[in-house]
Each structure stands twice: as structure tokens, then as C-alpha cells.
Image (cartoon, rainbow, N blue to C red):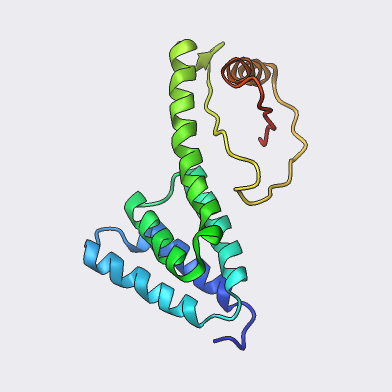
Length: 172
């Protein structure tokens, strides 16, 4: 297993598939057994850091695209990884869940102030993520249409009023 340099990525990919589709309609006991099997493979890996990096990217995609099946299964996997890797390694992954919860609450507050988040006929939603806890993403050159610029400026105004000492970096 450790002779192939791609094994950690393949195991992370398999784990991603399980957490997106594989655990659908599966009992809690079976979910526990499948995640435990993945952790047993993880324990044998020499490239654990490669697995964690790939797992982090997959987790970010699942959270941002809302493609995970069960938050309980996701949290169970984090608990199992925390036992094997330690608190510091898994802390960033846990913060990603916290960011999603806080972002949801923030958007609820914004939508209450902006007539259900519709600005000039555009329904606007944003995710506010903590820099450094999410995988690095390249900022693509993007020219926003005027309607979206208005939405972004309204949200930024709301955010600056709520958190005066924080800065927003937009990733479209």
C-alpha cells in the first residue's frame, strides 16, 4: 500500500465518496464500521499528511457545495481522525464546520435586513470563511456584472458594520 505514492489520495477520495454517496440509507452501526475501516487504512499510511491535505480539499468541496449526506457522519470522521492525528491537525477541519454554521447565521441576519437577500432582483448568498483554515484557492480574474457588484457592496457594508475590524476577500 505504501509503495504507491497515490494511495493517500485514493483513500481520501474513497472517503469523500462514502461521505457523499456511500453512506446513504446506511445504519449508524454500518456508518461507524465503514469509517473505522477507513481509519484503519489511514493508520497504516506513511503519507498521512498527503491524506489530510486531500481530505481537507474534499471536505471543503462537500461543505461549500452542500453535498455531504450527514453532518453526524462528518463529525464522527473528524473525531476518529482526532484520535489518530491529534487535536492540532484536526482543529482546522473542525473550524470549517464552525465557519459554515456562523456563515449561515450571518446570511440569515443579512437577509432579514435586505428583504430576504434579494437586491435589485438578484438573490444573493455568500459564505464567510476564516482565512487559513480552508484550502488555498486561486483568485480567478472575474468581472462582475453591475447587479452583482451592488450585492457584494451591500453585503460588505453590512459585514463592515457588524465586524468593524475584519476584512473581506472575495473569491467568486
